[in-house]
Image (tube, rainbow, N blue to C red):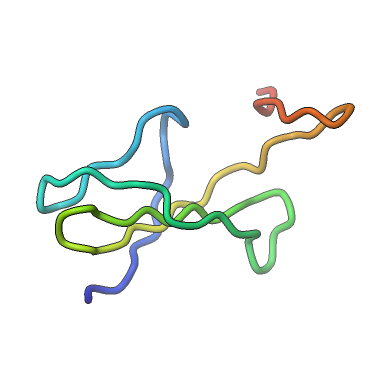
Length: 71
């Protein structure tokens, strides 16, 4: 299996497309190892099984609700 790649994920509502052309689904969401404001999103291809890992800004939580971070 190819090694996961690290990249910046653009639009949070669009799923990445694998190099093979297959669709990818979110496989895991975990905290960044050294930066608490970031998360790692791992996507897995439904066709070939390869994975892509993206570093994203953690969503802000206010009053128990998740919201998109302000810019």
